Image 1 (spheres, one colour):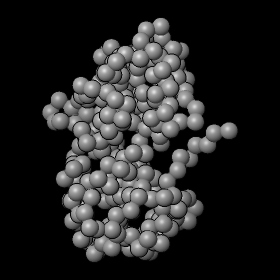
Image 2 (cartoon, rainbow, N blue to C red; image 1 turned 90 degrees about the vertical axis):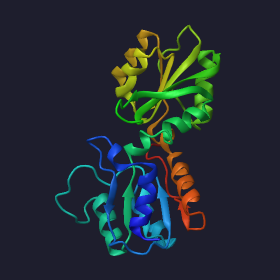
Image 3 (cartoon, rainbow, N blue to C red; image 1 turned 135 degrees about the vertical axis):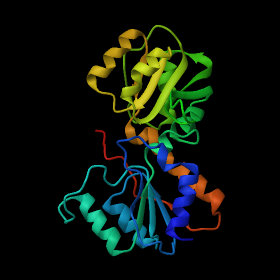
Image 4 (tube, one colour; image 1 turned 90 degrees about the horizontal axis):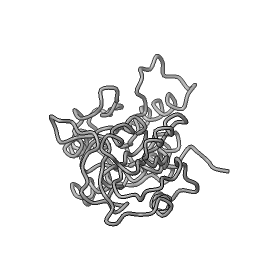
Length: 259
């Protein structure tokens, strides 16, 4: 397998053209279409990730979050991003980042986690009218749940040590909207579609006042709502190249700690 062949496998499942205009998905560091020894799948690219790739003899890394989105003015050793770039180039490691294309796919994180929550009749929360892509999902529980029981379910499914949420409503939870990662911008979409609850990561203080409209808002964490993306990538490679060396990074962890 070569770099181009691996890229083709990724983009056949998660087309690069589907990314948001502000995003920076794709092959961010090339290695001149080298022969690939192994693939390391990670969530974020850090210095630990690069070291793990070198130790596992992987010269192709696929991550969810882009190594950089804004332009770089220099490549020195001052920041972890610059150090990662230098180390990747020195070791001839290609880096591919698949960010919003996997967020917007039916075989993406929002649909996967909706299934984990037991939702049915799932569809996009904010659909691209011209294509079968979109951000977030909306679906329904098989049986309505008391708000307290629903919060407990979310805490369990996302393995959360603590959970942040708005005031519990008086009504039961039946229609649920979800968006992996940063999704506070879709709260109004969830309200418009009359969701009883909306789950995402990175909800800010003032966003919670939307709960006065009767919706339960849950911040389940950016890392926690998207880490299963690694399993999606692994599944794609397992089907396309089942006998190839593909590894899930062991060094991924949330940068947020709880006391």
